[in-house]
Length: 498
Image: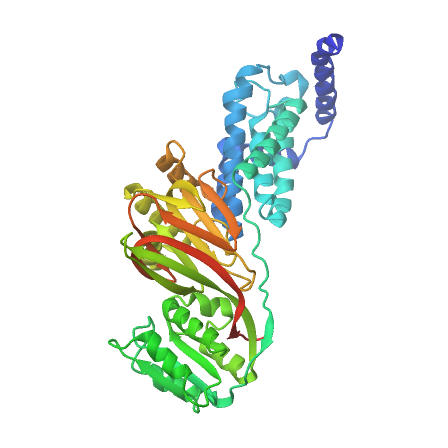
């Protein structure tokens, strides 16, 4: 073994000189200038930063691929220039090894082992390819050209290039493990059920909450125009929403309940629909229309089509048992939950993000909102399923939401039978710094402060003081304890068939 190690440097030198002689024997031509220019373009990562800047103009996976590539390149460059070039000093090729006209000028003075250009090139191309394989494949010849140019121009020995390329590949894979590629969203899946057909709105009772986010004085007339035979009730500011929805559902001849309003109003209507075994037609009358979007009725024409054809699907409903007030005389409430519940700083985060989104776009607005919220906020101490935590955020989704980070958007399945529990904890040391760093680098989902799990039943208790909870956007103060359970497939909702 020792004999092999003693002979290794000599064998490596002979291998390098043999390959360099083969390159030296190549005839001169225009390719000499091409490789010289390509090598110069990659100095200090300029080529890769330029490509990343162009990619960043395209949102979504292309922009994320650019960020992965730059991150991997930074890791590879740091390891190469600050680590191995110091540990492995080596002289660069001399003019007698290659034709002088091919040599890069000025000749680098740092250690030849390993090649920093090769490490950066492979790291960037592979980092991009792990997110967007097609783009990675397109960049692979460019990266290979840069790596080869370092031998062609006399800047490096072939083994320097091979070692540098290995460092680049390792940096890209390490960066992916630290900053995982966001998995694709699953396809939308619904469990179809048959519901009453409602041509012209016949047999449909619609409750319209006039406090809904998109309500206007023309709303009722517009609904009557598309559902001319439907009964429509506008709920005024001083009326009891639950009582009025129940009254609509109880009218003679009503075979389906329609609802126009925000997510809180829709949750109330869902409870009435389940109690009276009526299918629910969700109309896009809120500000964000979360459930209408997930149900496949984000636009009025989608709802009309599903109702006319009697196309429907089954959904789970969350049952929320709330205990609030004083310990010696608690108030107990039962709520229905269609979308989400949250405790901690999440409501403030959402409010700031929605305020900034029109000017900054959703991704950047989310980052800025996170920084503003958590820079000044304080964690809440809760007992979750018997375990005590200090939490920045406790988020519960009725069903699996995607992406699996701090900003869930899409819920492809409405009857999966689980709650999506997400906790961002402050139990760890340097909790605030960890959180802000995770937000800055986009690694909230993979950070140790983030805990993702699923359950069909969750219990949350206030540890020190009563807590504030939001259920489907409706804020509830003075909560002492809350228990969430799933009612599987109890709600029938109209949804256009795929």
